[in-house]
Length: 354
Ligand SMILES: C[S@@+](CC[C@H](N)C(=O)[O-])C[C@H]1O[C@@H](n2cnc3c(N)ncnc32)[C@H](O)[C@@H]1O
Image (tube, rainbow, N blue to C red; front, top):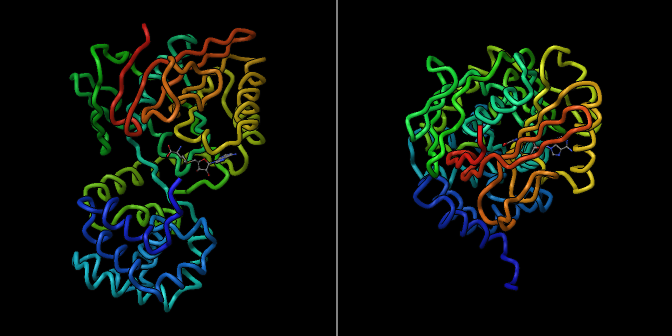
């Protein structure tokens, strides 16, 4: 095992490896922070788990977007890496307490509607298997709840198939791996959208929406434009956000789905954050809810993370994820791996017979 890297090395590595090519601004800023003893000492005022470059850079970006760090905002807008590096150090030294407070309060968010490209066909398939004409969506570990607009975006697959709303302002693309098409059927009507999270992000709240923007890198205008479209779409039909531990909150979420709709729980790259015992209790909650009605669960999680979903013999941590579909109907549970996916849903291999 190699020795743990120093904070200076972590910042240099982030700049020279993670940001290189993708973000010239963050490449320059991260390297400059790693070379500044004063900046590193300011970062060390944050708890250890909050010192990572992704957290501190998003926090500085948030202050810039909020108008509290105008020189940094101007440097980002101008794409001036040198000016951004000095401004970032200046903000860190002058506003250390604010930086630490934001870093402690917030989690870095990677919530992108791209997940919908894998969710849509699996939810439609769940409804078909359960014979449902309406669904109630419950996204567990929902972050900003963007998955809950799955039926309100348009998706075009590399094999020429398309699903969802072709007229939506949010259009996604995904690559199909292999020969098998995704199921072509449309999702039934969504009658309720519920997000469950320990710390949900409310896109209708100005501070929360700004934090989502701050988590993007400042020189990625295409992603920023896409996020704006996603936020605008979500704001036209905001989900009901239930705050708390999923295992505690799920009965309340199920109770809010009308009796004539199929509750479809979705989890995307969320269950790995749950201790193993909580994952099993999550499964138990689905089973309990299924005592009185059919319930479905669609999961996009790392290999072996989603309990009861087959791993297809794939190795854990092998870089792809399994798209799982479980339908609980009375005492029967049919749990299947309906696909493999990569890059958080940008590539999908559909596997199930439909
Ligand atoms: C890695 S993020 C995934 C977010 C989103 N589903 C996605 O695809 O990007 C995990 C989310 O699960 C939430 N979370 C972690 N433990 C939880 C729990 N016990 N109950 C509810 N939400 C939880 C976190 O707050 C976080 O928003």
